[in-house]
Amino acid sequence: MKHILYCADGILKNKIYLPRPFSKTSSISDCYKEQFSLIIFDERFLRKRKLDVDRLGSKVCLLRTSLGNDAVMLAKKYNCFDCITDADSKEDIAFKLRRAETLLTLHERIYNLERELSYKNKKIKAVVLTDPLTDSYNWRYFLHRAHQELSRARRHMHTISFIVVDIDYFRQINEVYGVSIADNVIKELAQLLKRNLRKEDVLTRWREDQFFMILPYLSREHAVSMVKRLKERITNHRFGHKGLKLSIKVSLGVVSSPGENVANVKDVINALHTCLVAAKKKGGNSIVFYSQPQQKRLEKQKQKVGVEIFKDKIDKLNSLLTRDFVEMIYGFARAIEAKDSYTGKHVEYTSLIAEKIARELHLPEPEIQNIKHAAVLHDLGKVGIDERILSKRGPLTAKEREIINLHPWTAAEILREIHSLRGAIPAILYHHERFDGKGYPLGLKGEEIPLGARIVAIADVYQALVSDRPYRKAYNKQKALSIIRQETGQHFDPGVAQVFFKVIKKVM
Image (cartoon, rainbow, N blue to C red; front, side, top):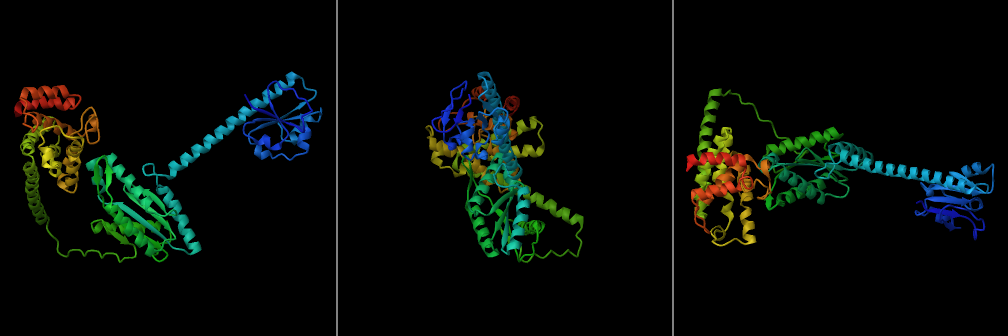
């Protein structure tokens, strides 16, 4: 029900009939109050006061007058929707109030629609101009704002600088740890950059691993100080995700105007790109200023080297790398064995079982090799764990369990920089995940878990069951297989388990 306010002078000698209760006032300010949506003005009341129509908003007004024929014209003069005269019957007044309330309902609907439209327009604008992952501005906004700031800098003759930040080897983080962890690194980096920028600075994201910054009123000298501070803080920061602590390296480029021959946005982008190319040629993890002399191009070799010589060198290198690679893998395994004799013996059998399962699934040879290496190195992260925890006979405390649960992260971080082992890292990192989603480190479920990890998991658990542990004796083969069957569909992938039961007969 709409709240009605009747505005009239003095003690309201003029009686008015209304079919519902209403409030009375002789103060013009009361008609602007929010609780009253339908206002009835006495004609003599309005003659003595000035009504601010704009402040009424979506309220609906009626005029109460003693005039007859000129009542409608008078109502329009005072911006009233309709008028109530002395000649109106009770039915006429009730009808006019219903019409006014219908109009008021329409006004409210229009107001709500306009408010909703305004809200959605703001959201659309935010989507169009904002990067959803980092909540920083996007590339479209950078192009628009950079043009504005360059024009303002020329007009008012002040300096402006631009910085680009590019994560070195970001694709490696994506491939090794997965999209969710890579996204977390990006979000955390954006937050770090925002904390170290001024209020007037603008942070924008371009591509998955690259940020452009607009720094108005910042000279080249101050930009140099800022970019060095940014690099130091990024280098010292540890990007965390569920116990994992990652460090990243970045390449940075800086260009300033005036003085470095950048007249427009295209010049700025080209200059920053040139800086990044130079930084990457240095191996990354460096700062390049556009004003620095460009590196000289390498001279072309005068003598042509035959294809056969190149091929021979490549074959020799491949042979050396393969030999060193195998030695390196088992060197890692021996390092673990020195701390945990169970693990050292365990990995050889685990690798054999995992390889047989992978071959039975007809996986490509490179993937089979990755699974073999993962099976050998899956407990590499235990190198950093106290021997007293590894060999403890009783149950682990919550703190000790937390330390043990970090070993997949530790192994992945150790191997991340070794290019030839990169393909094995997903299986190492996720071999303690469970098919029902109750594993660690991320609680992945079903086919979210890499296939290699699902294969290593069942081979690892089986070999653990048939081996002596500090806290129990080994199970026999029948008991171990029974436990594996019970856990299939919960701990283990049913498809992988089916192949495991087939190959285990041939292995053991």
